[in-house]
Amino acid sequence: RAEYVELENDHEIAKKQLSSLDLSHSHGGVVATGKNQTNAATLQQKLESEDKYKDINARLRKLLAEERKSLLQVRQNYAAELKIRTDMELLLRQCVEDVREEIARRHVETAQF
Image 1 (cartoon, rainbow, N blue to C red):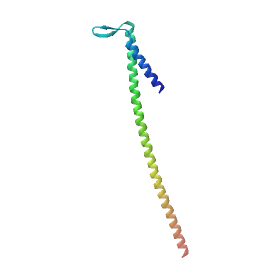
Image 2 (cartoon, rainbow, N blue to C red; image 1 turned 60 degrees about the horizontal axis):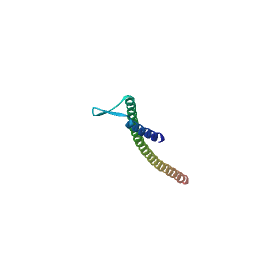
Image 3 (cartoon, rainbow, N blue to C red; image 1 turned 45 degrees about the vertical axis):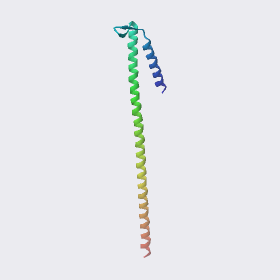
Image 4 (cartoon, rainbow, N blue to C red; image 1 turned 180 degrees about the horizontal axis):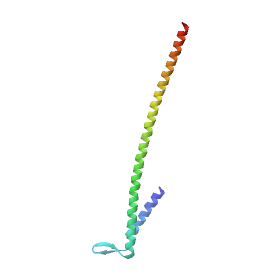
């Protein structure tokens, strides 16, 4: 987060520097002169590069948020599957216990006769 704030501050400083360069008017347009032309081009490239990285950063943050939502959904689905399996395991164990009791009861009945 601190790096992002620092990048924002650098971006604003670069914009101010670009706007404060000594510019002359030629043929109705604005043209940078001499050393300022190089500075203007460099600053413009820096601004474009920073804007590109901001766009990439925004897209990656959005993708990360979507992936987090997806992970949460997968975890919820997994928990639901475990609960269903656990319920079925309990039912199966109860059935096995009932069958054991029935077998034991029949052995006792058979032994009495």
